[in-house]
Length: 425
Image (cartoon, rainbow, N blue to C red):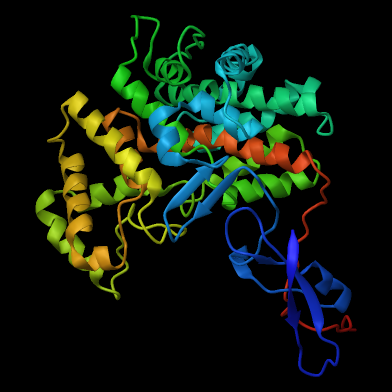
């Protein structure tokens, strides 16, 4: 909606360009620059940090105030009172479900948890030491070869079926990545278990004995899923939207999101936290590394502290810290060497004036990495679990894009290469 205007005056050009100013329900106003192309002009915004590439009603972030809303609901309230299945429904539909709607949604997801039996043979084509994200990216992209009965992106029912299939099958595929890497047999999903229980069962269960998911760990895993479900127009979500704008099938689009998430600057942050803790090695070395972190000329950085979007405390970190304390207590790991280093770093970051003044608080990746490590999940699986959680956000944005008039994405550039020249000879 536009009721204000901005005016652009360019030296040497007599006419002033008038641009509408749009405003949404939350957040800053946006200058609509689409009319500039008719004037032979583009805007220049590397990284798109000042550009709104779409309008969306799914998620809102105010980084300065530490606010994250899904459908208007604060993430802290959702993490405390809701569960992942309910948040999935909210992201897809824009409203929380009533009891009947939620049960129907859960039942539909459970009906899609198995994957085609032939898909399991795909895993044999990978080396046993392949990174689980490499495997996941491949098998998710291959889903379109098995489920081509719902690939009409202009059909709302087809889009809904694809959403259910992706949310349901991602835990199965993710657990298969883990099982393949350690040589254990794949575990079929159990639809009598909750979403988080089923994932833990497929990860850690074996045919040799009954596996009973620990309720504390189940709650923590469900909370990890909730807190990573969506985060507005980040790199991977924007990738999914851009891929979707070409008309690509949803499985290919989600695979593109997984590829983007794999980057260490995006989804690999919690894995980097554990790598940092291993580098520090011993609690006695913490003072030395704190000084290295404060030295602007030293390349060492404390991973898991501060956030690009949040200029205050990451609202997800507050909730994740509670789960972290609960898991460590349940497993009796308060004295684990690496986790002991993590807890001391956390305390320093919350009290040391250097970190407090710069608002370098522990973020969600810091605590989730500690939780996953405590559960016995290898660091190579951390980003896979992130991708599993974020699938609902990706498919919700993909569906939103296709639910309204759209056009293929086509970013512009500032060309700095040679001018026209003739081929020699």
